[in-house]
Image (tube, rainbow, N blue to C red):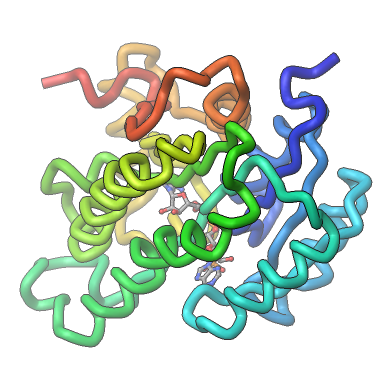
Amino acid sequence: MGFLQGKRALVTGIASQRSIATGIADAFHREGAELALTYQNEKLKSRVEDAAAGYGSKIVLPLDVASDEQIDACFAELGKHWSDGFDILVHCIAFAPREAIEGDFLDGINRERYHIAHDISAYSLAALGKAARPLMKGRNGSILTLSYLGAERALANYNTMGVAKASLEAIVRYMAMALGPEGTRVNAISAGPIRTLAASGVANFRKMLSQFEAVAPLRRVVTIEDVGNTAAFLCSDLAAGITGEITYVDAGYNIMG
Ligand code: 0WD
């Protein structure tokens, strides 16, 4: 029996088979969780429906986190399927305009790009947590998001997204404080660089990967399977004592000077 047997999980952010959300959904499925998936737009719908079919899931819902109406509709619909609630919410969503994630930080940032990056990549976690709260209350549930080292260090090109990830990590701590008394835990995984659609938007990503491999203690990059396995642990009762934490799944890269 898997260690997520009996858990119901909503996983956002599947955009391709390479998405970190795919690695997480795979691990959840393997460990016995029941899954619901969301897709950002019509272009991704059939891909996410195919993924859901592979997990034996019939719950596939539209969710663009830029829209309050879609957030409300998503959880209203989810509540019809899972009327007595659900246990796990995975937030695997980030976006910043390309100009804001390349070159000189100050050249690339402006009010609108700052706003978009923070709205989609950071605020959306709080928005989803707020909407999920009544359905997750009192179930020893778990919320998980994805961050990156650029939240705490100035990393070339990551720029405005680094500022948004710093906000995201602070939101993890404040949400953990708010939801802890209701039994819901909130954590983040800070993953090493993985080649996904979102990563291809970051300038010089390939160079970053080879530099990472040379420096990381494990001398390798991490995979979506690595992240998925840690996510499954953090969202399970095995991690019942962990909340408000940022867990590194980065082959040890962050410890190096
Ligand atoms: O190296 C990496 N790939 C790392 C990613 C290292 C550390 C952290 N992360 C984070 C990302 O910042 C993100 O928070 O992991 C999370 C998942 O990213 P991913 O798996 O690398 O990227 P991807 O497969 O592209 O999925 C991200 C998806 C979007 O994909 P695209 O590429 O189409 O923008 O986030 C979704 C979308 O499907 N997304 C949205 N979903 C709902 N509403 C929205 C939105 N407005 N915007 C983007």
